[in-house]
Image 1 (cartoon, helix red, strand yellow):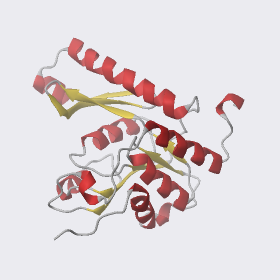
Image 2: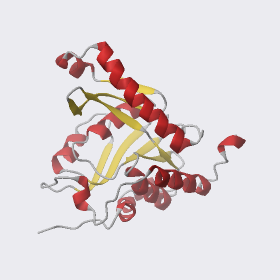
Image 3: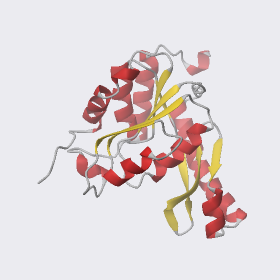
Length: 227
């Protein structure tokens, strides 16, 4: 029998915000959404907690032939993290790593340019960051995001998602860099993130842009060209 599902990402974000009220109305808290599907969830969380919203663009560096296995990540703020143990174990040549990074860097820059519109990255050092996505299956991309985010020296990293596989959610509890993990639904028979939503259409680049602009207007952030 099917257990509860979220109506859509916005509804999931509203429910997620209910569990995060301890972070509401705090000037040391910022919500970062992972594009693209994480932005509608993160937007609702930020609105209901009355804290700023921004985007954290992360691109996993997948192992050749095993793309789900992250050998590292690149992320917003010109951050690169490599998992040297996996690189050494798989004996991946440096030119191969460079080729993977070049490809992912192009996509990251495209998304950064498209989403950010020259707005600077918010200051994350010594702040509590709520890192939000629409769900975790293997968790590889979120792990990469956490690794990259740590380079910005936040005070705390809180991973918050509406749904995740039970094993993945438990695995995140043992990651030293993650101070708190919140998974509203963590079924044993998970299969895929989209299974836990009534409506799970792809989030477009334009939707991400609109949500970020609405958040900037709410937070009274001036137009980028006036900065």
